[in-house]
Length: 146
Image (tube, rainbow, N blue to C red; front, top):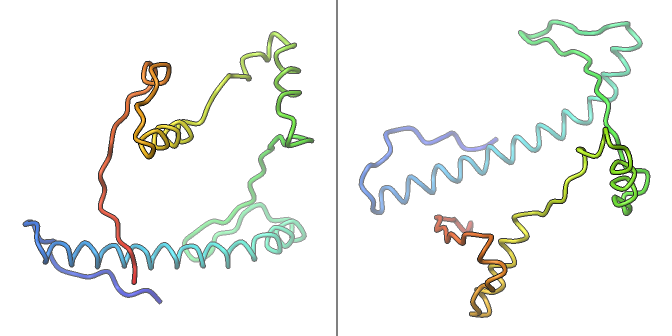
C-alpha cells in the first residue's frame, strides 16, 4: 500500500521546506501511479472471463456497488502486414472519396531528438530545419530516487 499523501499546507517560499514537500508529493504520486498499474493489470486479467460470463448469462449491463459495468463493442482496423503501410496508403489514394484518410506526417518528438543531436555536437541547426521549427529549451525539476 502506498504511503498516504502528506497532509498540510504547501510552503509558498522556495527553500528546503518547499523542496522537501515537492519530493514528498512526487513520492506519493509515484507510489499511486505504481498502484494504479497493478490495479489495471489485475482488472485486465478479469476482463475476458467477465465478458464471457456476461454473454453466457445474456447480460448487457449490471448495476453493482454504485457502478454499471456494461459490454461495449467497437471495431478497429488492423494492417494485415504491419510493415507495409505504403500499400494501404496507395490503395486509399487510388479511391478519390477516401484519399483524405492519407496524410504525409512526421513525429515531432523525433524532430526534437534531431535538434538535440545538433546541440549535443555543438553544431548549429541547419537553415533548412530552423526555417520550419522553433527551438524552445525547457527546464523542469526532476527527482532521482535513491
